[in-house]
Each structure stands twice: as C-alpha cells, then as structure tokens.
Image (cartoon, rainbow, N blue to C red):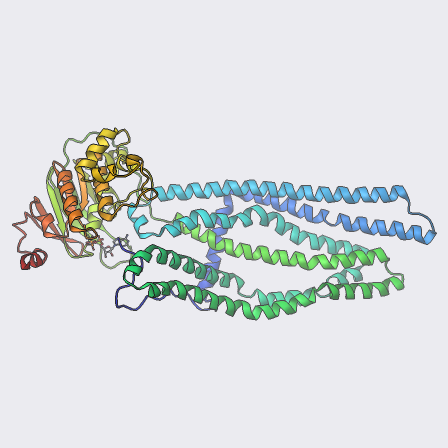
Amino acid sequence: MAIPNEPVAGAPAAEAPKINTSVPTAEDKDKRKAANAALKELMKPVKIQLMIGRILGGLSGILAVAPYIALVWLGDIVFAAHKAGQLPDYDAVMDTVMFLIGAFFLQIMVYVVGLTVTHFADSTLTAHIRQLLVEKLSHAPLAWFSSTTSGRVRKAIQDDTATLHVLVAHAPVDNAAAIITPLALLIYAASIDWRLALLTVATIPLYIGFQAVQTKDMGAKTTIMDEHLANVSSTAVEFADGVVIVKAFGRTGEAHNRYQTAYKNFIRFYLDWVGPLLKVSATSASFIAVPLLLLINLSVGGLMVSHGIVTIPQVIVTSLISLVIPSSIDKILMITWSYQRAGNAAYRILETFDTPVLSDAGNIDQTLETYDVEYRDVTFKYDETAATPTLDKINLRLPQGTVTALVGPSGSGKSTLATMLARFQDPDTGTITIGGVPITQMRTQMLYRNVSFVLQDPQLVRTSIRDNVKLARPEATDQQIWDALTDAQIADDIRALDKGLDTIYGTDVQLSGGQAQRLAIARALLADTPVLILDEATASTDPDSEAEIQRALSRLAVGRTVLVIAHRPNAIIGCDQVAIIEDGKLAALGTPEQVANHPHMQKLFAPQEAK
Ligand SMILES: Nc1ncnc2c1ncn2[C@@H]1O[C@H](COP(=O)(O)OP(=O)(O)OP(=O)(O)O)[C@@H](O)[C@H]1O
C-alpha cells in the first residue's frame, strides 16, 4: 500500500503544499462568499429555532437596562432623603431593590431559555449533519475511501460539526444580546440627557476606526489561516502514517520537512498578519481603557451636575454604561470571527456532501444460474476532466470456473477494471454482468454473496480474528472458521495466540503483511463466493510466506470464476486466459500460449528466463 508522500531515496523531500501568501486574493474572497453561502444552506433546518434564540437574546439585552434604571432610582431616593435630612423611604428602597432583583433574574431566565432553544437546535443540526454525512459516505464508491484520507472524513464528521456548535448554540442569543444591550443602554442614557449619552460613546468612534483597520480582510485571512491549519494537520498525519517506512530508509529528517514547512508557513503567515495588528490593537484598547472612560465621563458629568443639568446617580450610572459598551463591541467581533471559522467548516461539510456516490443498488436478489462474468463496452474516468479515460471500451468475458489473469504495465488500469466487479467504482458507460444480471441491479447482499476479493491491502478491521474471518458469513461456526484458516495456511499462527480466535486484530496482535493477507484469504474461503477477485502481489512478504500465500490462493481459486491481477509469471502459468491491458484498453486476449509473443508478456517473462 502506498505511503502518502513517502520520500523516494535520493530524491529531495517534498515541499509542504503551497498556500497563497498573506495577501487575500480574489479567489480567497470567493471562497469566503462560498463559505457564507454554505453556512446559510447548512443552517436552514434550524432557521426558526435560531430566530427564536435571537429574539430571546434581544429581549435579554433590553432587560439588561433594568438594573441601571433601578440604580438611578435608588440613587435619587438616597440623595433626595439626604437633601431633606431624612432617612431614605424604606418602602421605596425595597420596591426598587425588588425591581432590580426581579429584572435581573428575568433577564437571566430569558437568556437561559434562549440558549436552551439554540442548544436543542444545535444537537438536532449536529445529528442531522452527521447522519447525512454517514449516509453519504455509505454510498461513496469504495475506491473513494482509498484515495481520501481518514483525516478528511474525521474532520468533516467530528471537528467541523463541532465548530458549528458556537455558531448555532451560542451566537444567535449572544450576538442579539451584544447588539441590543448597548443600543438599549444608549437609548436609556439619551432619555436621561442626550449630552450624557454622547459622553458614554465619546471614544467609541476612535475605537471602531482602529478595529476596522484590525479586521480588514479578516474573513479572507481566516480562510487562509484555516487552510494553513488543515495543512499542518494533514502533513502531521502523513508523517505519522509513513513513519515506519521513512525510518527504515533513514529519511526521518526529510519526512519531517513537509510537516515542518507547513507549520513554519503557518507561523510566518500568522505573525505577519497578527504582529502589526497587535500595535493597532494596543492603541485601540487605550481608547476604551477604564481610567480614560471614567476620567471623561466623571469630569464632564461632574461639570453637568455642578450646573444642575443632571444628578450624581445619573452620571455614575451613565459612566458605568460607558464601560459596558466596548465589551459588547468586542463580543460582536468575537462572534463575527466564529462565523468566519464556522463558514469554512460548513464549506468543508458541504464539500463532503458532494462526494460522488454510486447509484443505489438494485432490487434483484436471486440465485444465479451461471457465473459467467461479462464486461461490455466498459468505459471509466476517475477525473471527468481527464483527456483520456482510465478504462476505454473494455469488452471481456470471464467464463464460469476459469481463471483470467489481468496483466499490463503499472497504471494501465488493471486494479480499476478488477475492483469494478465488486462495485468499487461503477462504469461511466457500459455494463458488467454476472450470469447475465447487471451488477448494478443486484441487491448489495446478492452482489457480495457472489463476489469476494483479496486485494493487496487485506482490509482487516479492528475486531476479533473470528469476526474478521466471518465478516461475509456471520452464521459461520468456529469449526468452519478453523477449516478456512487451515486452508489459508494461517491456522497454526492463530492457534499460537493466547486468545486464539478472540484475539483482537490491531490491539492484541499486529500481524505481518503475509499473515494478514492469509487471514483475508481465509475470509474469502469462508465467504465461498463463486466469483473472486485476486491481487496476487505478495511483494511485501518473505519467500516462505509468499509460498504459503500462493498455496492458499491456489486452493481458493478452485472451481471459481477468478479474475487475478497478475504481477509475476507464476500467476499466469496455468491460468485459462490472459487479458493484457495497456493505457486502459484491452490490448490482447487469449490463452497464455496465444499471447506469449505480446511484448508485455515477453517483458514479464524475460527476467525469469534470465535467472
Ligand atoms: N482512486 C483513484 N483516484 C484517482 N485516480 C486513480 C485512483 N486509482 C487509480 N487511479 C489512476 O488510474 C490509473 C489506473 O490505475 P490502476 O491502479 O487501475 O492501474 P494498475 O494497472 O492496477 O496499476 P498497478 O499495477 O501499479 O497497481 C492510474 O493512472 C492511477 O493513477
């Protein structure tokens, strides 16, 4: 199995994937727009709940004014009593305090109800997205999984849906509250005195001006930052995946390169972006510094009190309001940033939704009368835009009970052609039939009752040896499993394990490549399907293991319609027919003798003869 970006001995280490520099391009801005559109689309199912969350958030924002009103009342009562040389009126104080407490609890309650609604919306949406993703992936062609990193799928299902949490569960309520609270406070300040209202926001235009500089191109830059982070994460996974091989070749340092370059690129981008902003940020913060705001509000307010325009409590309260407004603006900025990050996550989720899917399996479920396999005019492209097809009008018949060897240069399309029989991909045009029934019309159970495969990657799952072997035949008894293991030449190895069939593959034991492959052969033996796809490559195993695998494969092939991807002369000798594939086309078809003079066959046999 190919190690992603495995370094080739002697070759310079690959560079980390390039991401554009720190200047957002038109493309970045387009991506930003696409991300926003994706977000809107994704949120549609919970639109109403989010609206309710916003309304309740706004309501709690309005209620946030009540404590300030109560404070002014309280102050007025105390000052009036002081002026009159009396104690404050007990009932009036109590009423105001009760109003203050009541309004405070009501505000909290409305806010919490809002959050509850949006949290329910979040769990509904997360479940909905994850369900759709899993459904989508369950219909993706099997070949998609081999070409797609598990990291990408995990990110879409796990991380990206989690990123949406802030946006769905918190942002509607918090954002509405953050916008409405300062507005309501400002209106209240204006209702006391318009000059006091102006005082509360005296430094805000300067603050907003500096913030605007700070947040310029923030959306597009966030998209670039997300790409950098995705790069760091994928190169780290690549490195971890390939670490055994690269260590074996003594190239650890170079294999680090893609990862190192990726994170250095990220750090450089981040410092270039954030470094200058820190100065702007420090300057803008000084305009909303508590001492400055108090100085302005209390000194000008004090002057207004001395002229009898406003009262002391009114100045104290509007000074407090002036301290609250900047934090609301900060909150709005933070939520905007969450929107930007969530937009990118939504975009990735929708991208995963766009994964090409196989057409649904058909409804035919019957016992076949014959097991002839026929490829008729099969044409296929992995990439729609490619100039030439991967498979080009292949016509091939595999008569029942015969062995057909597929040979051809690397990349000619052998694996694609063979695995199509198990619907790893469907042809773009043309059909594949077994016993005259197109495989796309068969129910999935019917297809896999008739076709099994043993490929280079043994495709074992992290479960017991027993469950791995009986995957295709859950009702198999232990005796049948041991028989299959014996025929696959692996029974002795499994018997030697402490937990025998209960050994968990990948946790209790790590099997060698050859052992894993023989376990996959045991699985195919137990599945006992009339049609079999084999990849005879045993390159990663030692000669003893290879001989055992060949013996197991010969046993497996008996009496079945076999399509074998042949890499060595041994696999061709003794087969019924040979199909030579070149550049996705069937270049020759015949018995081994009939095609013996084909240049590819000559090439294949040449080194053997030389020995
Ligand atoms: N999942 C995939 N996505 C995109 N392209 C692919 C995918 N799998 C194979 N290809 C491309 O399709 C072409 C045929 O590949 P295929 O693996 O079928 O050839 P092959 O003859 O089996 O090669 P080999 O003998 O090296 O295994 C190659 O150009 C390959 O790069």
